[in-house]
Length: 191
Image (cartoon, rainbow, N blue to C red; front, side, top):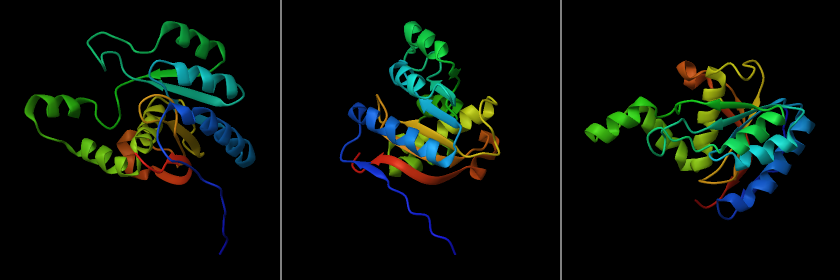
């Protein structure tokens, strides 16, 4: 039986102030463990730009909110950030959320909750960033932007910035339960 010892970074509070620490920890982890695929959540693109600059030599996928997420026909990713992310060679994925999508419309219209949102709420027991990490890996897998036979690092946060990073076995959303959270690299203790 072999034992793997890792250092996990725990933050006292969630939030944007943890972004630089998370990105440094992920870079070190990825280099040490030969992880090539990085998936990061970014709403306005600020975290995406910061990540793209640091991970130029990786397969980086920046996952944004879908258009209309906050209000009809509105895209939260700022155009100048989109251009900077692309200029660094990162891919940008804008798609419906894998753990809500149409189910959120059913909840809003009929006041009921569906299975995917229950799964999302269960993942939030580990923090908002954990739920988002799982979701963006599913989305990147569905778009064919990451390798399915290799582990991936997902980076997300609790609102703005990054405060959570997980090593994951990827899966497509149709095979959600084949995905796995293999290691925690960083997350908030309190949320």
